[in-house]
Structure formats: structure tokens, C-alpha cells
Length: 118
Image: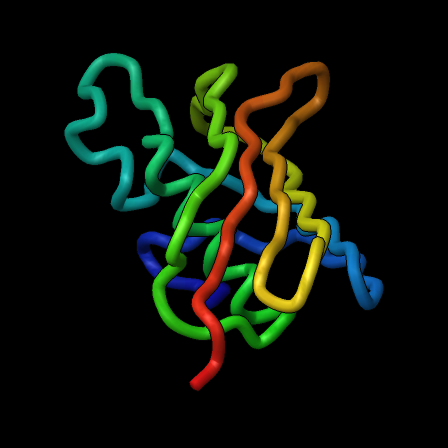
């Protein structure tokens, strides 16, 4: 995940062959908060999913757009500033489970299925 106006700050990465834990710093200055919402900014769920997809690609070399998102659940909003943990577990050749949490809160989880390599 690159450092851009839309990317969180990567604070730490702990990675094993099938598991990874990435701690991200989410500041109010990220472009995703503009207009979402003016008086109470929250991180859109689609952005959380996007970050999980980017991390899966970077860690496991998955390519293409996901062909399926399974068991996607959003449980608690992320408000800036926040420090969140993105946990990823590779389940198979083209599949990974992810969860985003912070101290005392579980924000979202799901399973991403990528297409077969051609």
C-alpha cells in the first residue's frame, strides 16, 4: 500500500506465509473522508474492502478484480484519527479472509476470492 492522499500510513507489518497483520494509521486528511460526512467523518466500508484487496495483492501476488466477496460484514464504523489492524489469512490458492479491528472494536470482516490465473 503506497503512501498517497487515499492510503493510510503503514505503521507496522508482521507477515508469515499464510498470515499477516498490518497496523494502519488513519488520519482525517485522507481523501475518503471528504464529504463522508462533513460533521462526523467515517471511513466508507468500500474503502476498507479496497485496502484489504490491495494488501492481498501485495502479500500474495493475487491479480485481477475479486470475482467474489463472501461473508462481508461491517460491524462498527471507523472514525479518524484511528489506528486499525488489518489481519489477513490466506485460505487457498486464490482466497483470503480479512478482518479490520482496533482496540476493543471489530470493524469488518470478509473473504475475498480472486480469479484463476490465466
